[in-house]
Length: 78
Image (tube, rainbow, N blue to C red; front, top):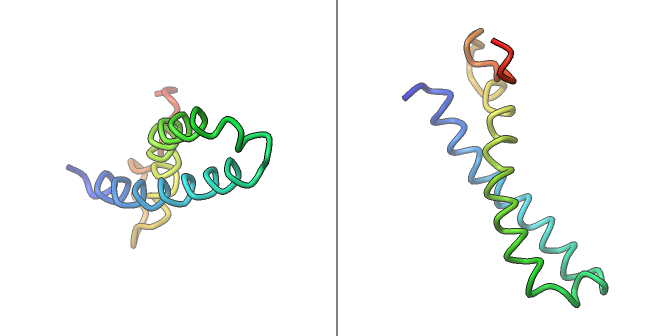
């Protein structure tokens, strides 16, 4: 595997923790959302697992010691 993939995997775990924590605090502190927490928390877990690798992939190139043109994420244009 490429180095950028390893960095993405490691960053994804940290991003997942931060995004999950922020969403969980929002769900549990807002009274309207807290009423539906037993449905929202499992849904939030799924959302964070889907969103975290995407966010990490955009962060990973800037965490490298040097930049490589092939490390920039593309949106399917090429």
